[in-house]
Image (cartoon, rainbow, N blue to C red):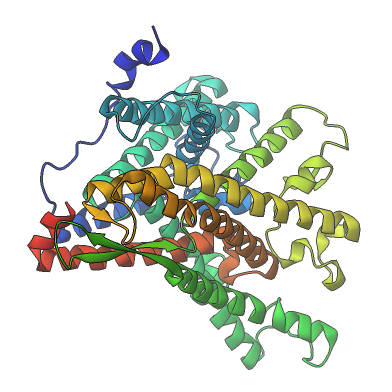
Length: 489
C-alpha cells in the first residue's frame, strides 16, 4: 500500500471552497475580490486578545510587507504558512518524492491540493507555537487578563495561539475564495494591499497620524524651515538630499522598478502557432522574459525570513556563541546570522555615509555578497521549481498546445516536436528571468524605496498589479464577446 492510499481518506476530506459551477460574471468577481480585501483590512486591525498591547517586537521585521500580515493582530502569520508549505511541496516535487502526476491524473490533483492544505495547517502550528511560547518578546501575554480570567499566563498564551491559528486558517480560505470566485489570487491581493499602504504612507503620511512622515510633508517642512536640514553644498546636505530627508534616490529607485518591471513583462519571444484543421487560424505563444513571474521571490524571501526567525528564537532561548550570531534590539549584528540577513536599506551598508551599524567594511560587503548570491541563485532555482510545479514547463505547455489543436508551422503535428521547440526557450528564459528579479530586489533594497518598502515587495506589487490588469482586460473582453469565452473555456 502506497502513502497515497493511506493518506487519501484524510487529504480528500480537507475542507475547501467550492468552485463555481458555471461562468462567474465579471462584476460578481469584482464584488468577491473587494469583499475579501475589506475583510483583510478589517482582520489586520483586530488585535490579539490577551496580548500586552503596545508591547512585543516585530517577528518578521522588513519581511512583514511580503508576508502580508499584521503584527499583533489575528493575521499575525500572514501568508507565511502558505508560502512555507509551497516551498516544502516544491522541494519534494522537484526531487520526485511525492509520486504525484498533477498534470494528467485527477486523483493526484485532488491529493496534491489536500496535501498542500494539510501542510499549511502544520506550518501554522510550527510557526505560531514558537512565537507564543518560545519567547515573550514577540507576543507578550497580559498578566491583567490572566488574573481577570483566572487561567494563568499559560492559559493566556494558549488563547493567543488559538487566535493566531484561526487567523492562519482564515487567510488560507480567503486566498481560495479570491482564486476561485474573484480576480487574481488572494496572496497577490494581500501583498498589494500591504505594500500600497506603506507606499501611500511614505508619500503622504503625517507623523501624528500614521507614525511616519511622508516625503511630501517632509519637503514642505524643509522649504518652510520646520525641518532642520544642513546646507545643501556640504557633504551632510548632499547625503540628506539623496538618501536622507530628501529621499531623492528612493524616489528614483521606486520609479525605476515600476518602469523596469512593466518593460520586462512586455519583453517576450513569440512562437508562431497555426491550426491544421481550421485554415487561417493562427496565433502566437508568448514566452515572457519574466516567464515564472515574480512570485518565486516570495519563496526565496520566506526562506530568508524563516532563517532569521530561527536565529531570533535561538537568541532568546540559549546563549549563542559569537560566531553563530550576536544581536542588538532584535537585529543580528554579527556572526553567521548577520551574514545571512538581507540588506534592507541604504543605512545597512553605506558605511562611508555613516551607515553599516558599526560593522567593518569587509563584513558589510560580505553580507551584501551573500544576499546578492542568495537572491540571484535562489531566484533562478525557485523559478525553475515554480515553472515545473505549475505546469508551465516545456512538456506540460506542449501538451496544452497540442490539445488545443494548434501546432508550430513547419513541424510535424505531435507533442514531441512542439516540446523540442519550447525547450530552446523556456528553461533559459526561466533562469535569466529569475536571476534578474533577484538582482532587482537586492538593488532596490540597497538604494532604498519610498516608505521603506522592501525591493521584493515593490517588485511583487508592480508585477501582480500588471497581471491583474491583464486579467481584468481579458475578463472584460470575454464579457463583451461570449463566443471567446466558449473558445478559451
